[in-house]
Length: 73
Picture 1 (tube, rainbow, N blue to C red):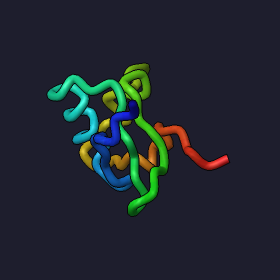
Picture 2 (picture 1 turned 135 degrees about the vertical axis):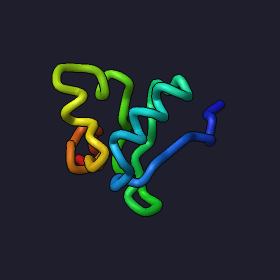
Picture 3 (picture 1 turned 120 degrees about the horizontal axis):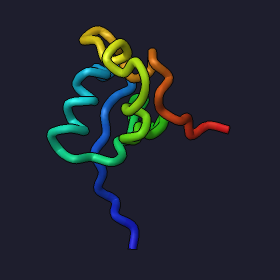
Picture 4 (picture 1 turned 45 degrees about the vertical axis):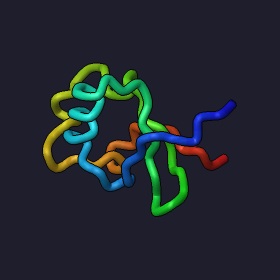
């Protein structure tokens, strides 16, 4: 069956706090919401890479970094 439970954050959620969620909870994926609609998914791979410390400032937001994949076509 399909697991209907998931962890999600709003697209204006802090990128720094998102990083902390991944680290403390051992997440691999995190649903990004725009209101009640799914806007995309952030993966662990999205948070790994060059200049990640620059991207994860306390003022960065998930949507501003365009790090999640859109579900729209």
